[in-house]
Image (cartoon, rainbow, N blue to C red; front, side):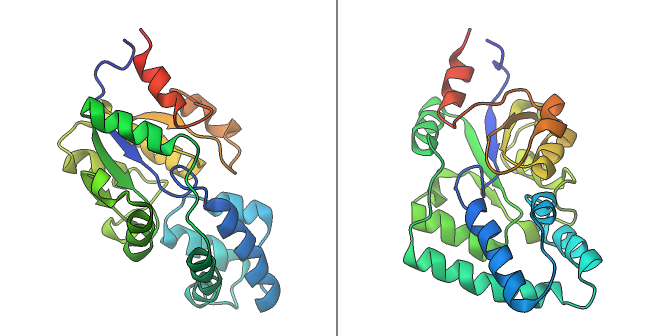
Amino acid sequence: MKYDGIKGFIFDMDGTMFDTEKVYHHFWKVASKERGYTMTDEMINKMRGASMENIGKMFNEVNPDFDYWEERGYRKKYIDQYFIDNDIPKKPGLDELFDWLIQKGYRIALGSSSLKPVVMHYLDKTGYTEKFDYICSGEMITHGKPAPDIYLQCAERIGLKPEECIVVEDAPNGIHAGYDAGCKVFGIKDMSDLDDVRELLDEEPETLAEIIEIMEKD
């Protein structure tokens, strides 16, 4: 089998496990219109999956008269209320895939650029917290995506070499991080255009459930 040496999976969260990127995108546009700063679709696409530090730098390059953290806090109020009023939507095949991974004995880690309170809220609300052997959020590493640090740390903490892990990602920043860490990388379709990073991908499954078929192929 092609992936016989794989012993663990490391997941991104937003856009990979949960269909949340559309919500984030929408409220960037809502908040920027209300507050008067520039936020184009192209900017949002470049920010997707990056560390908070890198997002802040990109934001301030275009909006030097605005404080990123203040504006992020303003937008976050909308997002928090949205997820109080609505369930956190799972990407198709998520439950099926995790049931299979756990049954097969794979080690599972999470490497998300989001901050720990957000990560834990989403995992607790969806019942996924206990499914992970290790959880790493954005503030737990020095250099965020697209740097490979978060995936290197995840692999180490679940006791595996990077080459024994598959990173599952939806955004170019995270795909670069997984590839540079030395992991295999599966790209899940979400809101990001993967054309520029397709050569870094080992697989591009249509859904999370398709990963099961890929792993079981001879």
